[in-house]
Length: 234
Image (cartoon, rainbow, N blue to C red; front, side):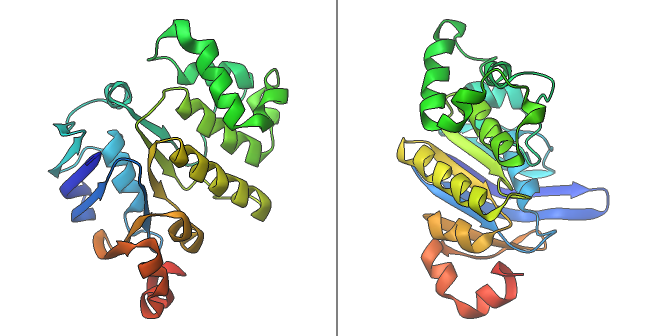
């Protein structure tokens, strides 16, 4: 088991965003968290990465409890985040943004690691000297993936990676996620395009009002017509 969240509870004031949910990611899996807006999907991802503090429950990674660790400490454990909205450094070049992703890594291997990222994301190679702020939205999303991959994670968290992208770039991002996974990285994916997310996921969890409403393989969830009408295509 790569990641396990047990009885995870998160509140914002009087609002209970997560109400004691359980979910897991096994090594080499793509796991999708889907559901309507406000279901708690992004909150669950942020709790795994340490951006929000749970009220209760436990998160373990590679069998080790990571509750209380800062996000940078979780990065050193092998968890990386592609945040919603990309959160790049727009005045810095593509190369500089990639280098920022390697801040916890062995600096001596920076060039080798960057070459591996550029092989996976060849669209970035010819744009290495451009500032991130002049890239298209789709290119910026690829750069956000590249920056996270510079950390050589065991688990990649992706928060709404196709939000605001054109249909063609949505396909590119899903293909990129599949290739990252083929190379051995586990992925926990929060995605507003639930149908495509479940098509590529090994397993999925449907969240509703901070609780797990349903879980199963991606195909099982897609083939449940009542579930699909009620929550997946909401």
